[in-house]
Figure 1 (tube, rainbow, N blue to C red):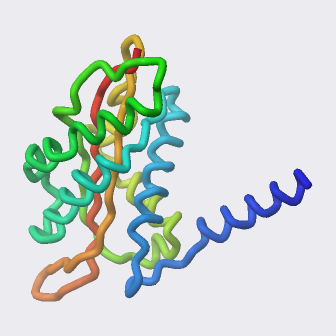
Figure 2 (cartoon, one colour):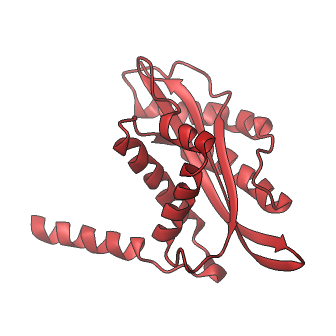
Length: 194
């Protein structure tokens, strides 16, 4: 029975990881989760504590920030203070509920962020897993972005990184032509659970 369960889990994982991107029915939730896993894998490889996922942060801040990037066709850092303030208590309570015998020390009132824009590049990625790897690899090529995804929230007694990210499609206008644009952002709140 254990072998059957293991085989089923491996089969489901391999199907999910090898799912070919359909740009007409782009699976944002899948790629968002795969990017999160890739960043945590990278942090684990470098000896940095894994980040804790927050659905409230994802829905209230990450999707908002990436949506602004799509509208602006940019890879900047739009102001997300109002969006964060709107979900700060929900994020705090969500994370606190995961640690009933400890306390989340700080309010959720700030975040660090990386963002990017790229375009559909079938020579580099055709599956959601390949896209997630590609996006994280792009952040790793920039020293500032690399430092944030690798080291943010890694030191101190009970340090905890609360994080989420969003990947969305949008137009990417370049030299008079419109391409399929891929926009991504990833936010990390540095906090402590003691």
